[in-house]
Length: 252
Image (cartoon, rainbow, N blue to C red):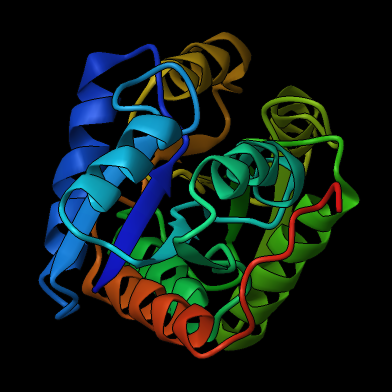
């Protein structure tokens, strides 16, 4: 019997964890696998180990593990696989497939575009968009978010899109916001490229309040949240993984 295990990041903020669970439950409706469970890499429960065990206890002989992560980074390439390596050893009779994160996709650019157009500050040739990622030392994060920024910019005439990051990558959100305040643009639209709420949303609000130039207009949009388009991408990632080769442990 086949199972899907949705692996979310996790958060110290209960509201964010609750949103992740609600998000995944909506995504589950798009898939007809008999067993579907959610779990978290860190900071929230159930853990990946617990989620995997639940799938097995429900009769799963094949598990498709898919990271519910926006961008390609160390979590998807190293941290989650390190846990899966141990699970492969613990459950040698269970076939495991591992999917890709959401990554670069034109539907993600469309979601960002819709948020920009919904902003009261959206004005052609007068709007600068800051697309704000969580950030990582992994260069693939910058590559992915810059590619999405480029897709958005090409689709919106007269709108400039800059990518920036909250941690571990440059330019930092603070530096990008300061540059925006000194730019020619009158309207600064900030879009958090985050799936759920959390501490980082509060950080952005405080930063905007602290650096706001009275000659500029600032708008902080909401995080992405559940979107049918994201559920569709995750379904594609699940189907892709199901048809791929079995998971090969990163350590042999």
